[in-house]
Structures are given as C-alpha cells and as structure tokens.
Amino acid sequence: MGGSADDPNEAILADMTDSERNAWRQALSGWPGDSWPNGPFPDWDAMGEEELAFNMNCSSRGMNQALAERDFANHDEFAPLLEAIDEFQGDLKLEITEADQAWSTCMADNGFPGIERQRQSQQQLSDEWVETWNEITGRPDWVGNPTLANSPELVNLRERELDQALADLDCRVATDFKARHQAQINAWETQFVNDHQASLNALRDAAAQFGN
Image (cartoon, rainbow, N blue to C red):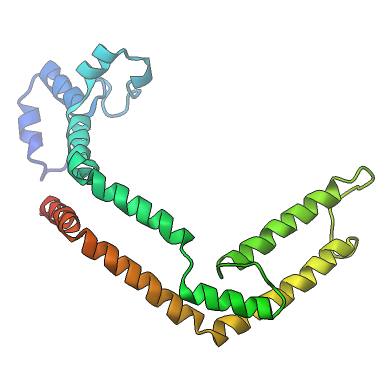
C-alpha cells in the first residue's frame, strides 16, 4: 500500500513491529518484506512447486480466483454450446449462398468460370500471384525480384486481375449480391439461435450474474 494519509492501512501498519510489517507486505505482494517495494522481484521460475505454493501472495491468489470464476464460459455446462458455435462458424465459411450461385454464374458468363463463392475471387488471384512469383524466381537463370518491368507473366496476371475485379464488381451489382448474401447469413444465424436458445440464455444469465 502507498503512503497516502487517506490509506486506512497506514494506521494499522504503524502499530506493527518491523517483522510484522515485512510479513504483511510480503504476503500481500510477494516481495521480500525488507526490500519492498524497491527490492528484486522474487524469482518465481527458480522455485519448486511447494515453495511456489507457499510464496503465492494474497494478490496473486485473489486474481487467480477471480479469473477462474470469470472464465464461466469454459465450464462444462457450456462446453456443448461452445462446440456448436465453433462448428457453426466453420460451416458458415464453407456455405454457398444463392447469392454466391448467381454471382458465380454471372462471372462465368463474363469469362471467369469456376469460382464458386464471391469471397474466393480475391484469394484465387492472391494464390496465382504467389505461384507465378515462385515459378519465375525458381528458374536457374533468374536473378533478382520479378517486376512488371521485367516479367511478362506478371504483366499478364495484372491485366487479368483488373479485368476480374471489374467483372466481380459488375456481377455483385447485377445480382444484388450483398443484400441477398447477408439475408441468407442472417437466416442461418437466426436458425442457430432458435435451435440453441435455452443454452444461449443460460450463458447470458451466467455472464449477467458475474457482472453483478
């Protein structure tokens, strides 16, 4: 504790003997009482399990207990719900919405077939840049980094990237992609909430109880 005149502990500390005061300070903070608060911090890593348990100070114990209680979401009661949430989020990344299907058809009509989901468009191009870069730099006679100035392959890829980006934009507009895609995601999320309403309510109540 500090030396403020408003500190209620100061009067208590003043009535203690030096040894009592040092013991109190070490119990609170874990610092050796005769060097608190400016002495070397205890070497926790060098302590064995029994010594570490003995020297665990009040502040550390209180914090560990508070964190354990706060971690209510990891209690066994909520494990099935958390697993269901993880599974749902993983599946959601793989789902193809009706908006994706309409967008994919539009892209194929514009010369870019084989892209199932709109979110794959940018990743596909990124992968091709890496693959092309590696192919160029892997040549035995190649020296330095490929650039648009010295690599026709990169020039061709850049032109196709621009054409694909424009087609992507046109198809998103033509298919009303954003609104339709989000509507489908919202429907799936609503269904998940309805299917797990009781467990979600229990988790909400646990969080509210902790907050109070």
